[in-house]
Length: 62
Image (tube, rainbow, N blue to C red):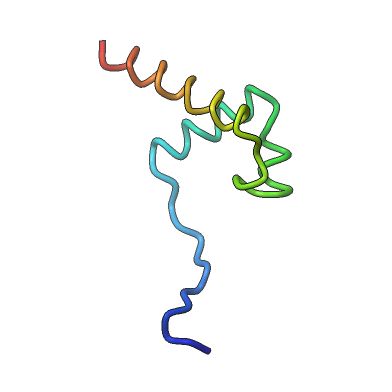
């Protein structure tokens, strides 16, 4: 095996990852993400998650 290949270890999710998963669940996309991964989302689905994340993070700062 190549020395450059990294093993896929389960890393602890940070707060933004948790927010992303929470929003994906609210949009009904969590099952799709678990089945095909984040790369399996369409641009529209990923944009919806990102937009809602931005909105919530802005609201939190206020």
